Image (cartoon, rainbow, N blue to C red):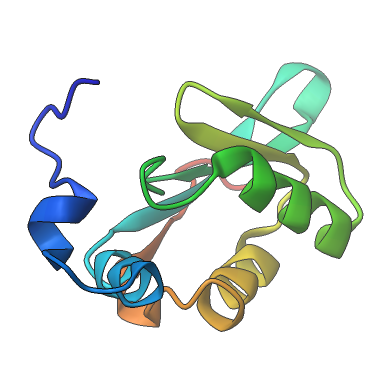
Length: 113
């Protein structure tokens, strides 16, 4: 497994329990949320920066899809959700996954509708 500058769970946690380790590493991640325009004017919310070593991206995507009642997928280490879900995704990431709000960056689109 390639690390490409990422810290492994073992190097962050040493011998700490896994629950504490996840909490520590989630506090160090920077998550970016942005909205992309696709074909026919459809909007897609893209969530990047969640570490696959800490979170199972498919499980996180499944939780987000069911909570938001939208479709979505996991592609190339990021999650894509149908529609503009930035506010609701930010709330879920903060409340349910324990990611600090200051570590979540919402990238506003340059185009105005």
